[in-house]
Length: 126
Image (cartoon, rainbow, N blue to C red; front, side, top):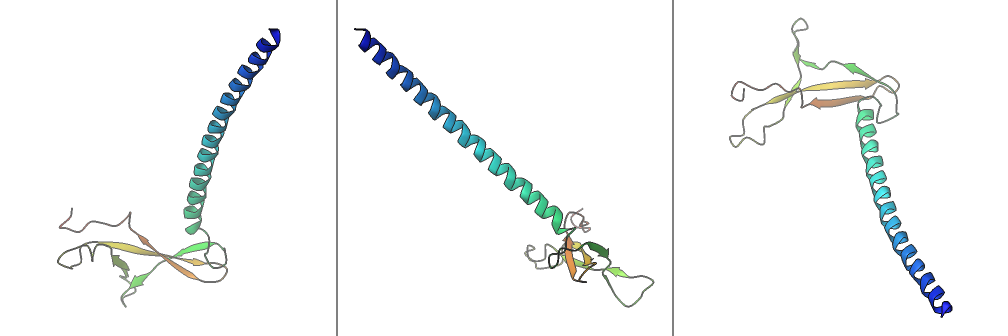
């Protein structure tokens, strides 16, 4: 009789350990998934931060430069680009964003950025 009781006790312990093992595997998968998502988010943040500080061609340092239009050097007009031109049903000029540029100090490559967050509203929108 004791043989069956010992065998039954061992089988119950094995079943409990298997359940615990499955639970730990699920928790490990969740932790690995969370760690992967966090790494991807960190990588994206670093990529976005680096796009404004590192040259895409050679990896050198970027320095800001000014882009202006017009021939009057005493009153230059900052270069801007329409951001909602194609969203307007009338097809008109509705909003503009400044074009900013940075040049690489190593290779001289000029990188242009559109400053959409800093775009001023026109009279009809504000």
